[in-house]
Image 1 (cartoon, rainbow, N blue to C red):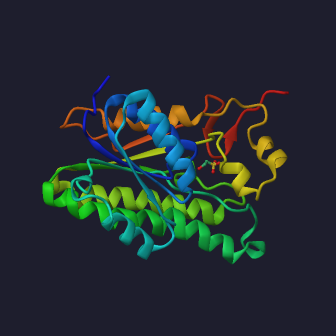
Image 2 (image 1 turned 60 degrees about the horizontal axis):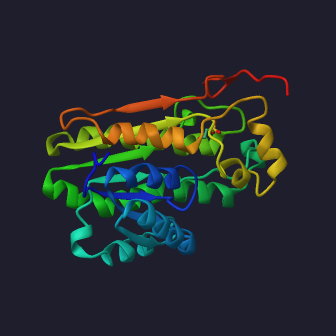
Image 3 (image 1 turned 180 degrees about the vertical axis):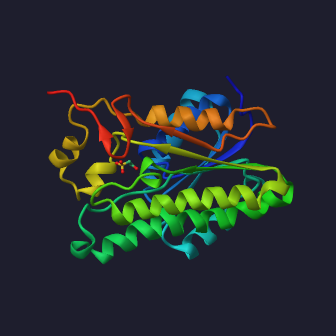
Length: 258
Ligand code: 8X3
């Protein structure tokens, strides 16, 4: 439909799940994509596919989002004309483990905090000065229902998503005078690699999370993100909370017998 013709869209976490779905949703709109993640081969493959299907121009950035130095160097390596990013989609994020705090693993906490909170801050820190200079741009953060209502054993993961919620709100205030939009897209249950990663590769346990529920797909979430990105210039979507029809918030889910 070409609503984003020649807009430069930076997607973190683009090698899987919601990030990858965003790449597929934004490419047909004529956007130029910066695809970022750790797994370079996956990004290369994605770029080839989007080039064939939509003639998408893409740059690939491979870095560990937990490492500020890598992000800084990687961003600096972009061709100058690609640094004026129109839309930053902060979709990299993950959960590790589900335990009571007294039984939890500090290593897992570090990974969640370093990815979901610090990684988002690091990347935004690099991209934002260019938006501020142009007084134009849009930051879209991937939050979660877990950033609105905590749930049992969710402690640190929920804390990271509450932090994302706070960062989105305060960015919106701080950037008011710069005409930069800030949106937060906050899904409930989405079936991606999320639960498999959370449960350290235990596919059966991951499947159980969505048992008896038709979860959101990554495409459903990408669609909400695209909606935020395609509003008229004067409209900012502050927040979209979306859940499967069988879910009200983090703690209320109705499951059908299977
Ligand atoms: C993902 C939603 O409820 O699985 O952020 O934590 S939940």
